[in-house]
Amino acid sequence: NLMKKLLVISIVLAVILTACNNIAVPPEEPDNGETVSIEEYYPIKENTKYSYEGEGNEFATYVSFVDYVSDNRIQNRTNNGGTETVNVYEIKDDQLTLLYSRGETYFRQNFLNKEYGEGKVLLKGPLEEGNSWAYDENTTATITDLSKEIVTTLGNYQAIEVTLEGEQGKTVNYYAKDVGLIKTISSGEGYEVSSTLSYIENNMPLIQTITLFYPNTDGSIDTIDVQIEFNTNDEPKDIIEEVVKELSVYEILSPNTIINELYFDEEENSVHIDLSDDFITEMNAGSSFENLILQSLTNTLGNYYGVQEVYLTIDGGPYESGHIRIEEGEPLLVDYDNVNPRE
Image (tube, rainbow, N blue to C red):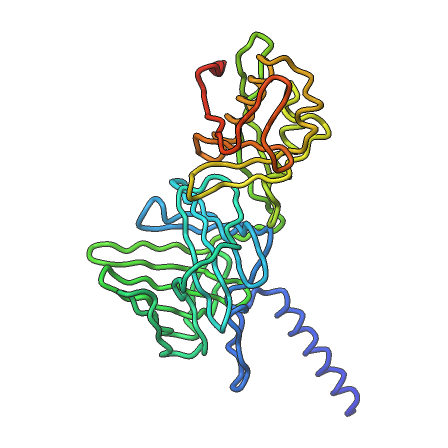
């Protein structure tokens, strides 16, 4: 009889556990003595798209991607329909810090390795109610709840509530274990704006559109819009090289040309591209057509990065072909005068 009772109990427990595993149950608070890390409340999930539903403002609805991850830093990109913003976060010394934020960033660029100051601390250990710190000169952050129930379309979560209070108003952020930021409420005199997590999609690349410029045989330049996809940690030089090679009607980049380097210079507001020598040796073009190729490349990069100046080098040195020499430090300038209008 004892064996039968134990068997029945085991079966009942198995059924209960199976049922629980099939339900999205919000994470429980840790038992006393169990330490919880910041990483658990801000997990890094590559190639994942987070969608947030907004209320109170047309730009409160947004999507979020992870652009880059390296060591203890994360670069996140948000798009609210009005602008794209890149944020660099650091998880270090038991705190989550916003090191850098840049709006109007419609291009892909790795900002993780720059030197930054102290930044703004979003979440700080110990994760205990009442823990408080200076967010910036005018704002204080405080953990005001450890298990606030937040209702979302994905289910209900027990979240850590962090309240930022300053002269301009109040912002409350909610972080759920193993998920991350699930809700933000900003309020002040006469307004309240909220963004709530509504959807999580895995294996989703960042999709952008790049306009490729290429020479026409009549001496003008044509364009075509192409979608490009970036997974987390993909570099623009690799993705753009592949796309330009595949889709140029005329070879802007010859089959063996390699983009050694491609980056945006924030201080100069310019773009630098370094190509392998194959770009020149395999070009096989007269001076006028070579100029069209250079102008097409310049326009493509200038348009994508939103700059007017593009610096081109070959294997680290000046560009020099039989027809054209570009002096060191001399930029190529974006010029749309010779570009055919879209049909």
